[in-house]
Image: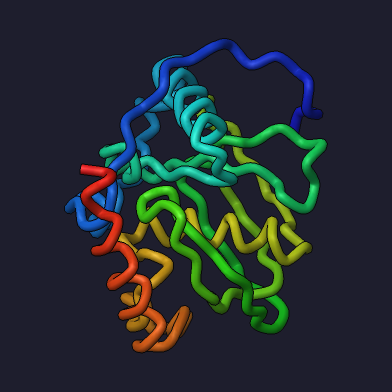
Length: 192
């Protein structure tokens, strides 16, 4: 399933990033249909990984490049020897207590704020060929990346203080959310 770092990945084109408040970042993404798995989705996955790496990210979701489909790329910050994976149609079962850590996003570059996330998770997903997997994310950062990217598929940004899915609760306080948006407004012109 996970390839060790050093395995070759074909050179892929880089995708243009979308920045807050592009409407695709607020969209709830569509499930990938059975007929959409295969070579085109595999290539899109390689492009997500290449773009993520180029921007020094540890995760990148399809809406961040203007595609409203349930797919994201993620690395493993707690297991850097593993290659990134491409995740399609994920579900998450959150486990453990809540942990706080500074988190950022490629769609609001260079802005970080404390975000609360579940300490671990079990992720069920398909790869771009349609094969099913279940992955236990038992370390705080690996679980955090999956939760962050999963949120993108539901139109949720890390600074949304009122979560659109009440079962999970708020990620941060209203004040912290306002701070992120104020900081973004100061640097936004650099990304237009």
